[in-house]
Image (tube, rainbow, N blue to C red; front, top):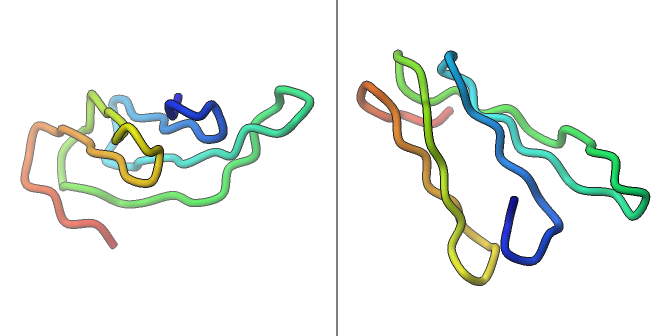
Length: 64
C-alpha cells in the first residue's frame, strides 16, 4: 500500500506487477499491469511521496 493509502502494488510468483487504485469505498481497481523481469517479483516498496515504487525480482528488470 502506498504511504498515502491511494494505491496498491501486488507482486508474487509471476513476472507481472499489478498497480491498483484504492477507491473511496475501500475496493480496488486495477489500473495497470507491468511486465517486469523474465523471473518472478517478490517484493515492492513505495517512495515516501507515493509517486514512485520499486520492485525486486529474481532476474533482471525490464518494464514494458
